[in-house]
Length: 255
Ligand code: B12
Ligand code: SF4
Ligand code: SF4
Image 1 (cartoon, rainbow, N blue to C red):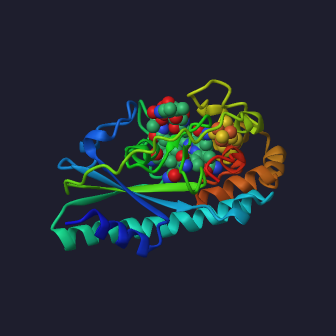
Image 2 (spheres, rainbow, N blue to C red; image 1 turned 180 degrees about the horizontal axis):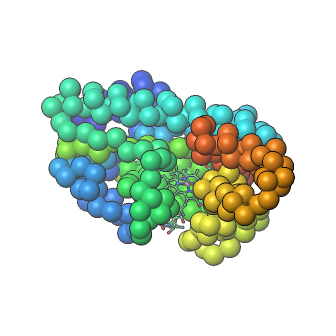
Image 3 (cartoon, rainbow, N blue to C red; image 1 turned 90 degrees about the horizontal axis):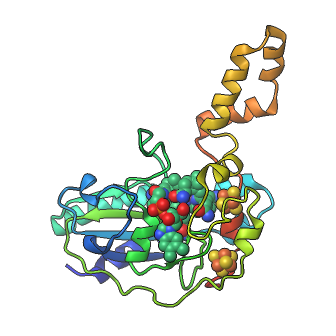
């Protein structure tokens, strides 16, 4: 079995980068052990998909999100195809990792910690380094890469790590963040980011429903015509949507 054969298959599927990490090199203190996903795991195949520049840079957040939905569709399908191919081709076991959702909504994670941290997996697989914005920067694609991964029991070695410091400390990501969520180095203030980047997520839904429950019938009628309700309704069938991509889009590193 060869890493190059697996890499070639991943690139043929449409990934822009493919890297490998031995399970022992995955170091993510806050996420569970990889064995909680695949008990026989020995390595991680990480795939990265580049954002389309015109969409990511669009002043219209719906355009950026439409493109992200595209990455999510392609990546989810490719994860299944790659996992199935690894099993067929090498008689291995393979399990795909979600790009974002579903997340564990139970304590202590509450939807803020994934089963597998794709940033830590990408770093271990030689696909980049963390930047000041706490995102992973790839030497060629910069920070405009979205990751997925497949865990497998194939004993694959890690690709060489990126040793170059790609973040130039320009501070653009910190300054542009409308939520002021990146003020402390090495830490994203999740709730601040969430309120701005996902204005129609669960927090808004709870707030709206609470207000609705206590409102008089006339006020309730008006609330149903409020664009906020219409957006929450849309999110309930489209799925989560980001309205902010700024820290990702502004970063000049690696480009
Ligand atoms: C939950 C989640 C969120 C939450 C919480 C983020 C968080 N702090 O972890 C919220 C909603 C806030 C969020 C926001 C965003 N997210 Co998000 N998110 C995730 C998700 C699903 C899980 C992350 C997780 O488990 N975190 C918990 C643990 C792993 O984090 P941690 O150990 O505490 O590490 C944090 C710090 O300690 C620090 N850190 C850790 N080690 C090191 C080392 C060094 C040297 C440094 C400097 C920092 C550092 O970085 C982390 C950020 O706080 C991942 C997908 C996945 N499965 O990994 C995507 C993911 C991280 N998100 C991503 C993106 C792009 C975003 C947004 C830009 C939104 C958007 N429009 O797309 C913002 C960026 C916010 C930011 N600048 O940090 C991408 C990142 C891609 C990349 N190139 O790095 C991911 C990997 C999705 C993907 N499939 O590609 N996200
Ligand atoms: S996604 Fe937006 S709100 Fe969240 S950290 Fe990045 S710039 Fe700030
Ligand atoms: S915008 Fe500047 S400071 Fe922020 S991660 Fe990119 S290079 Fe580093």
